[in-house]
Image 1 (cartoon, rainbow, N blue to C red):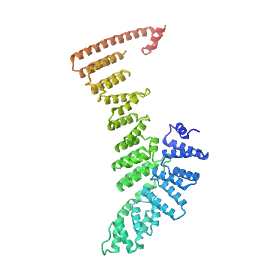
Image 2: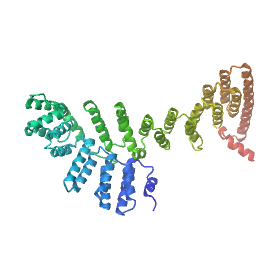
Image 3: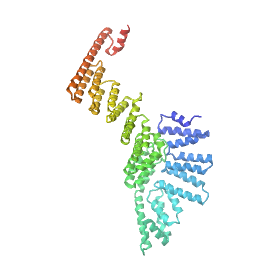
Image 4: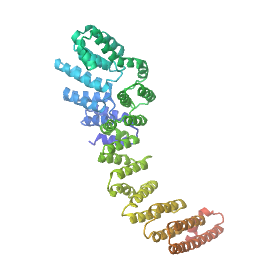
Length: 535
């Protein structure tokens, strides 16, 4: 049986990221029904490419649990899932619910609590996280010191059940002993109460400290709830939606009202359902850069390598490469650039240029950089504009090295392999002036170029005159030896006269043929000429 992933990629290669997801889900279902030995491979590959989908992470974990009859094996899937998609409330909820369903003793209860504490490190800022804050509050109800710290954390976040948690907090001190109030004072203020300080004074200071958090939260609660009420997508499903605008407004609001870590959380949460939106990724990375959080951005890129390469967002891949360079991971950066340029498209030249610039910054050997250009020039099917760019960049690079003469010859050879016209001839002369004006024996080399260009301007008197004038003007610009100038001008004039005679002969021949055939147009000259020769 052939590899179903390879078959899938060949079949659906031209589709969008969203369209391929739809068919990939069909692939999973068909292999589930047939109890295929490839099912595990298909799940892994799907989740590598579509990591922001809690439903399929949970489905895969349950599949493993059913086939292995092992809760531990299932939990390994969840642990990997939360590494790949740590900000997903739905994914954490599935994981915690699965562990809760398997618990059968007190030790398992502690395991659930530790898992909830871990979850809140990643989704504690989530609007729906109140359920887990309340779980911890119940668990630590007898540990007043831990409980008061929990209240402060929970009340600094706008959650769905904020008012309920606030009400519980208001009743907290009614059930505290004097010693517990002292320990809470120390936990919140980081110091011991003064000697003889009253309980009321201690409680007031604790409340004032917590109010610094809770009052700010209350002030924005209504606006946050307004944004949250408009967001219904909790994971990427490939279907079109209009929620990106809501997320953009939400994040803009958060930047003025919330701490940077909460803004970062919102970006990551937004990308769970909007992961195919290039603008959101780019804005997120710009924000991380503004907060000097380059390591966070790089960590995301490395972790989501499968997704990033599959969705192939060009600007994001280029940012990833630059982050690798920033951390001096040059080999990793080079691999990203190689991947980017392996996909020809509208950004091909831009990507090649960025890769070449990278190599110039980090490579000490010219060969490392020239390899990029040589690969392009050796491809006979390469587009002319790409070849032109490659030869320009290669020769500019070599012009500053010991291979300067080789570069000049290489450039001229490339030029003469192309159709000669006024525009590209002017480009050639300008390029030579800029990069090779100090080259020994330059005029001797160029005299052949001048003559060859003149000889190539057939059947076009205007083009011939333009090229002759450009040749003479260029010659007098780069040479300061009058004898050299006069000798080369004689060669140019001789070539002009010879080509002019050839052009005139061709024109006379064409006119006689036109008269001979009568109705045939000048544009049909070539076919008519062949016909006469045959007859």
